[in-house]
Each structure stands twice: as C-alpha cells, then as structure tokens.
Amino acid sequence: MNASRKTIERLSHYRMVLSRLSGQGVQNIYSRELAALADCTPAQVRRDLMVTGYEGNPKHGYNISELKKSLDVFFDFKGNLVAVIVGAGSLGRALIAYFMPKKTMYDIVAAFDSDMNKTGRLINGTPCFHINEMVEKLHDLKPDIALVTVPAESAQEVALKLVKSGVSGILNFAPVRLKVPEKVYVENIDVTMSLEKVAFFSRQYREEKNNG
Amino acid sequence: MNASRKTIERLSHYRMVLSRLSGQGVQNIYSRELAALADCTPAQVRRDLMVTGYEGNPKHGYNISELKKSLDVFFDFKGNLVAVIVGAGSLGRALIAYFMPKKTMYDIVAAFDSDMNKTGRLINGTPCFHINEMVEKLHDLKPDIALVTVPAESAQEVALKLVKSGVSGILNFAPVRLKVPEKVYVENIDVTMSLEKVAFFSRQYREEKNNG
Image (cartoon, rainbow over all chains, first blue to last red; front, side, top):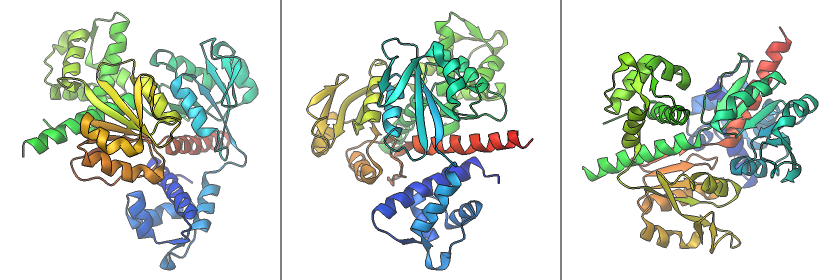
C-alpha cells in the first residue's frame, strides 16, 4: 500500500491525539472532532483512516481504543525497530533520553561519537561506541534506522556508511542535504533553519501590526 | 517585503552552506553550484537572492563573503533576538546548549519549568525560573520569540500566555497543533512524528527491495 508523506504525518498525528484522549478517558470521537484536533478536514481524516484498513462506524463516531489499536498495527513492526544514533552531543543525548522510556516502538541500541570522553560508557542505558567502531558494530546490530546528529561536515560520510550497512531510513538533524541512493528515506529536522523562520516571520508580523 | 516560507527556508539554507564554504576558504560560487548544495534549482537560487536585495554578478559567480553578509543583514535584527524557552527537560536543555555558544542572533534569556529541581539555577548560563513566575518575567524580559518543549497537555496554555505577553513567534516541539491568533507565527518540530515517518517509509522501501 502506498501512502503519501502527508498522509503518514497525519496518521501519526491522529495516533498521538487518540493516545491523549484515551488517557483522559474519552471513548468515542467523530471525524470532525479528530479533524479539529489534528488541524485538517473531516474528509481527510476519513480518507486517511481508510489507508490503514480501519473500518469503523463513523456515524456514531470512532471507538478510540479500536482506532488506536488499528493505527498501532499500521505503524508497528513485527518486533521493535532497531535504531542507532550517530553523534552523542547535547542533542543526541537528549534524543536518547526522549526515546528511551517509550520502548514501545524504537530501540536505540547504540550511540556513536568521535569524542573519547563520551565513548565506552552508557548514555541513559544506551552504550556509546567510538565512531571508528561504527562499521563493525553496524554489521552486528543490523539497525533499521538511524538518527544523525553529527556536525554538517561529517554527516554525508556517516550517511553513506549507514546506508552501506543496510540502513534504509535516516532522521537527519545535521544542517545539510544528504545524498543517498534511491530507496533510502531521509527526513530532515533543521532546528536552526526553523528558528530562523520563526525569527523572520515574527518580525514581519510585528512590523505589520505596528504599521496598522 | 513578503517572502514565502519556502523561500525563507532556502535562504536560511544558503546561508549555512555559504558559512561552511567560507570556512573552507572557498571565495566564489555559481548559482548552479549553490543550487546543487542546497538541493534546489539555479533559477530558484537567483530568484530567492533577489528577495534579499543582493545584486551580485552571477556571470563570474557570487562572492561568498559578500553574499553571506547580505544574507546576515536580511535575517538579522538590529540587535539580538530575545528568546525564552518553556520546558527545561532533556530536549529544552539540549536546545539551550545548542544555541548558547552561537550568541550571534539568539539570546535565550530565560528558561521556565514546573519542576522545582530545575528552577532557581543556571542551565548553561541561562537562568531557569518556575513556570508560575512566567507571566511576570515575560513582562520584564519582553521576548520576541519562544521555544516550547513542554508536554502536549500544557502546550496550548503556555502558548496563550506567551502570545498575551507579546511573543509573535513560537518554535513548538510539543506534539500538538497550537491555536494562536493571526499574526503569530508557529513553526512545529515533531520529532516523534518524523521518526514514525522514517520508520514507515524505510520499511516500505525495504519491502520493495525484497520483492524485486
């Protein structure tokens, strides 16, 4: 089944909204309510959920726990997803801390860094190895995906090593466009660029306000 | 001058590419080279740079240091941009550590958290106050923008307080769509959603490879 990036984003968002509602004891939800919470249209919600194969009864609203289960199955692997992280600076360590407690889907099995002070020890339970050992360790660990938080200068080299070892998905935080073969999925998160956008548009909005 | 979000993203990206090249001692660059490095077309590069008012001589390539200076002026404020961060968990602390050393454009003047163990002390040089003091402190600090790394449940309430105090730009890491008045710019970074996309598409690509 082929789903677009936007559809997957929305499905992931619905899943988070449903988790939250379920935690609050809510049992049913209409597509228009879910749409309002996920900032899209009811028609989109219904179309997206069809992609997952979920057949609810939207007349009386979706049953939240059933719908969530269906999304869990849609997103989940048979087992956990094996991930590694390359770069154990402040961002890398924050990501390990962020994902470690939620061991439901991601299992960050190793971190790699070039700084000897960080290697040879555990970071929130994840062993950190020297980057020179990476190729060898990747061969053993066979990760599915990788998070990359190294500086821009080394990101491309790291990405190629990851791809060579069989990684087919990379979440890249380095401010550089990675060149990878087809059939490797790269998602970029560029915090500096995002902050620059916020700075630029907040200034523009403020000037517009001041001018009238 | 009105620039689209995509244009601002690309300009921010050019700026980073130029910084890197300049650090490597490169002096000139053609629009097609910059386009290749920034993953867009030469025509886009030329159009985007016109927005900033830069008038180079693209025949012999752009002068990197001049072009970078022009982009710095375009993005920069008269003074530094005053930012606060709400939520001083692992991600919040990583962001403070990430932006503190580069005091060129952003000045994270305060952090806020509800955890008493984090408040009343400095985090990488940034004072951390209790969230109950936020409204009062915002009144004094008058921040331009804010980074939000609180849990999804509290993000909306935090956002409204920020907006009320005059913040017109928010970089939101909480996995929830914030409802804010017009003329407040929100940029979302949703790490979990991004990782779910990577997981989903990397699996799809792998299955396609295995099936053919």
